[in-house]
Image (tube, rainbow, N blue to C red; front, side, top):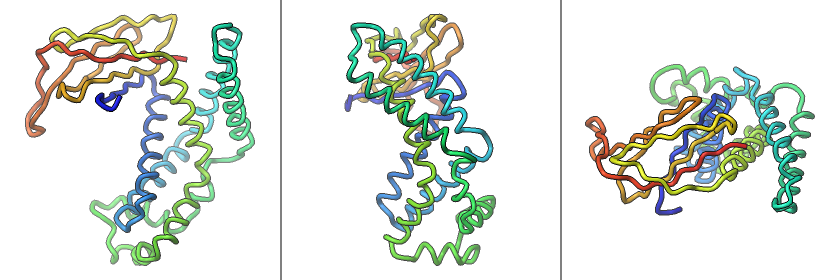
Length: 256
């Protein structure tokens, strides 16, 4: 798949939220690993964004609902003889462990991180356009100049309460993405359309395009059908144009 560029389109609000959370965790992993004083503000921005998810909505309940729904669905599949029982049993056990851990996690996720004084101050200053300078928040400037190992320790400590959220979201998305296989499709003159079987509610569309084709999909989806229009844009300063050649691509219609 290294020669392909994948584009994903969630078909419900829950999946949109999970994909955004996954992206935040990916950003955090990258920037906490590099650990410079330029990377750390991005990592802190990720933490405050995750705090926004956990304080403005009951994300824990949404994750629990989806995990339990997937678990029930996979349990029914386990009765089929053609299923790899060992692999499925391991997956069901991991799901059960996460569900149990989420149920035992009382209160709001990340409450201890929400009470960190420095993060609260940074969040308040972020409402002002531009970066936070040393004259805005001397305590932040002081922290950014502490040893890298100390800063990394603090960042990991602040993110630790969200580890269960990360593991759960990653498992949900991993199960969903691997729920089916790619089909080879062709968009005639850059356009493709397909009807969605309402008996098998699709949750996520995944379209993979060869990088050498120099085009990307614009996906429009409803309950009954979806369409894909391939566009090209070699100059970001101008509007993209419809791709006029046939485009071969891989399609994955994910549902569990």
